[in-house]
Image (tube, rainbow, N blue to C red; front, top):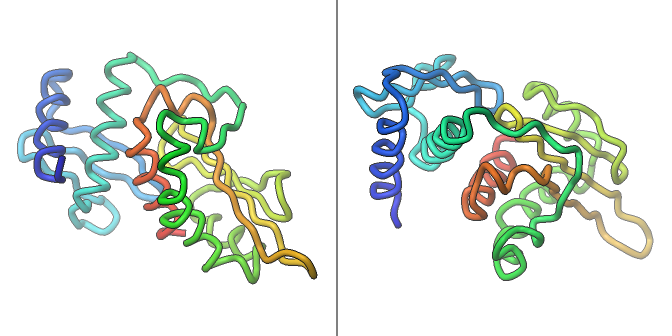
Length: 185
């Protein structure tokens, strides 16, 4: 399903669930307005439209929020991507599109991610040599860990998810969400 079809379906699904015409969603460090009348999502800080793949993530998130009446509270139990439905088969692609990006940016200096993530309200975590928990969307925490290189091994990184994410997003949406995060950090 291409962006156009996915967007069309998401707009229809959201319209079927709410009579609201404007909805506000915080995504990363920005506030977005979902305009159901004009089928547009606008970054309020930059006054620019959201990219299609970002729009799909926000629409799917808000649809699930309405379907569940409230998103689940994070459980505090971290899971690896491979624990998601289809995650093992999709892991090499996930690793390349997300973990690989984090490693290229921060593998030589893991502590640099702390400063970069501060603008997104990230919190330090006791994981790896450097760990942060970032909440790209409300109640969707993501743990990013980095380990320094040593004499034996190169730098390493991992991205873990609160187990409740599987109640909010499908596996493909999790990949796209994490890829947006990796490129934004």
